[in-house]
Length: 426
Image (cartoon, rainbow, N blue to C red; front, side):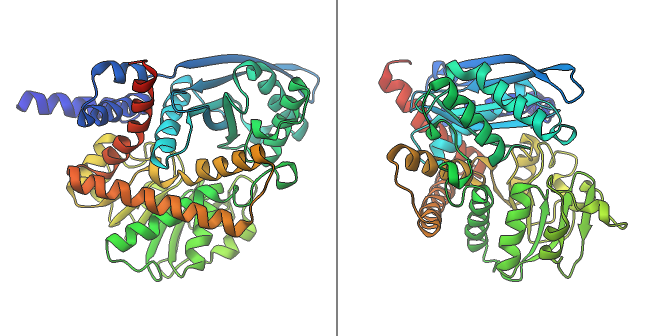
């Protein structure tokens, strides 16, 4: 038994920075808990399709630069695959694979007719001109055009991509397809068939998850001390939502450091001064490190930046009673285990950040039927789905006596496994 525990500990350490390995581990545990045979895990441990493309772009200095891009389609047993496209210098094939699995799980958790997809291009958009970004966006669509489409695989915004990039991609796909096809992609500008609420959907979903978690722990969000790691799209919107709800956002951070005020930060002031990439701390001198930020005294901690932030090294130092993951994979398996053992309520990323894919689904439905909903209708539908999904996973965790992450994976994987079984794949 001691040897087994040692082996498990070594495995956890190895998976601390390997998001694909840790994702597979939890998927395997979830399938075992549900009683599925090994072949179901073999089907789900990797994407069914993985495309690597090379994209030539003429740069502003008239040179040609070749970019590498990826598109993963995890599983289409339930329906077409769906997921974002990120532009980032640290994009890897392994990361894109893991993210496509997470998208499948998110779709299962909020009961959407999708499998998971994900895309990425290795680049730094912060160092590219508007014209270069347009060339890259259009080149990516041309490269993957044969495997995507409104009934195959529907892209969306992700890290460092936005509604303008989605508009360029939709226009390029419509040219290839030879008719206007807004349902090919979501996260578009409203004038091109985008949906109300899409830009803030991920943050709105996280905020709903925070409210539900606070209710379970008897914490009033009004007056609660909240720390938000990350001030990009999700982090800035949810900071604003919480600030407007009366919470004390005592700390925020970006890639260059963190700001802290125990009496609460003026979020409106910070939003007014952030740049287009969510950077604001460079304007201040007395900043904290991200490590110090995570360990601040607070009621609710929201990691909304990058993966592998709460690990075996710092999980024992986390003071927040509730941790709600807005980023993808911010807590390692070892970190999850420690937080659970300490009685912390950890709301996993595949649940908390599923608001984005939910409103993307609303956009796709509106595009397909040619009838568009009001912002109030979108907000109401999102609240209903997120609250139902949260309670389903919370109850599963209580009934099965597992942590919220494993419960979320169990709920998320079941629909996909059943669809594959009925199709006769396994």
